[in-house]
Length: 75
Image (cartoon, rainbow, N blue to C red; front, side, top):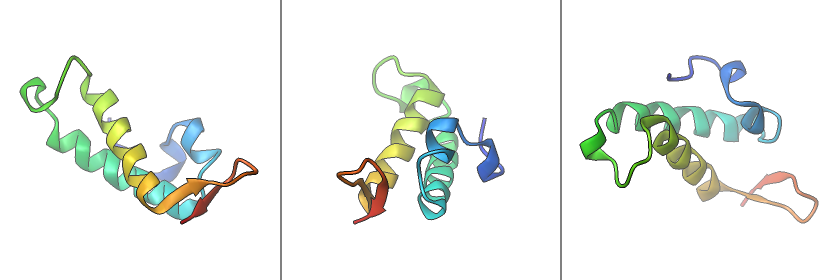
């Protein structure tokens, strides 16, 4: 289930990440959704959706980090 709009992102993403980080998440999720479409392309028993979310969070964490106050900020 790729995300066409930022408003479709899970609450944990859209309610916590800045817009640019949401865009990174969306692009990474959609790319991973396409790339890991078959189980033989994934490690372990994770579903296609679980893998896509993990990839998306990893992409966000390359450019953003949580501040001491708990907000996501650019590195």
